[in-house]
Image 1 (cartoon, rainbow, N blue to C red):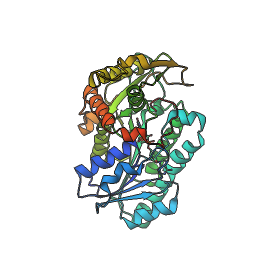
Image 2: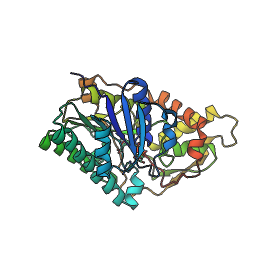
Image 3: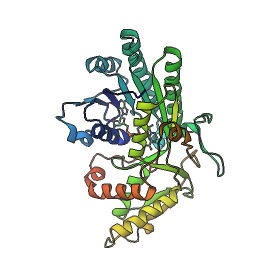
Image 4: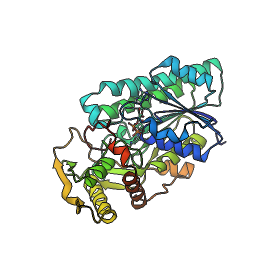
Length: 352
Ligand SMILES: NC(=O)c1ccc[n+]([C@@H]2O[C@H](COP(=O)([O-])OP(=O)(O)OC[C@H]3O[C@@H](n4cnc5c(N)ncnc54)[C@H](O)[C@@H]3O)[C@@H](O)[C@H]2O)c1
């Protein structure tokens, strides 16, 4: 039977995917109620949700998922029965130079949320009508060689960066809370997302902002690393399907069957900008491509086998890579205030 989420707690809702999810969800389900909990780290932007301020079914709370008392109070006060958990430290480069925050937020923070959910939903209320959806990544599976089969839900975990290891640990804890305590959990492992509101340290927004300003776009190593790119609202539609119809305790891979080398992706962006801005002094944009030393331990290839979510839940991406990238470029060109804000702190240049 389809699960009806009514009162949601969305963690990390002021970050890239969280922001898109909040907009997607409230547009599609305007009669539901949503509380966003976000610590507003460097990656979170309160302004992303400004247009929802004043809406009676929406509230924003600035706070940390590590704050157990706060999370418990929110669950009780707003009768929350559905948690959609995006909050995380998410940038691989940052995890290489400072893993501590990743272990704290991604592992301990996820555990805190699970503890609070168990306490309120199982120990205090014994209410079976609840969901905890955990948003995770394909990076938990490690790396692929050319010709290897894509990651499926049964691929063994082999995380290679502190970021991926912290997400892998959080996936295991979610699984354990389902098996041990009977919490109604689901998990999704998604490939690389792109779209509006992505922090400009990640590859696509960084490339668009640098290219349009005539600045170098760094390409790690030979640029032949392969990622499976998915438009962010295609991720969100997958999460929506899982929350409503996914089987409890299951994990679902979400991906777009869209493998691209980093270099090819940058070439496409350069050509799109040449076309969109023919009078720019920075044309041809490919002149700004600059090769830099590769990231340590850089995974070579990710690819997602999305057959489970397609067959079980009728999933399929709505955007092609061409249509999604065009929308994305258009958004960054018309929202320059997003990436020109004075408080942007760049760190590395690559997708997580
Ligand atoms: N970006 C991708 O391509 C991708 C792909 C697959 C999965 N994911 C997963 O999706 C989720 C969201 O990713 P994103 O790219 O939107 O990340 P992001 O870095 O853009 O946003 C993370 C958000 O979490 C908030 N946050 C961080 N620590 C917090 C804490 N302790 N308490 C409360 N809030 C906190 C930040 O302020 C920010 O708003 C992450 O769990 C990530 O692992 C991302």
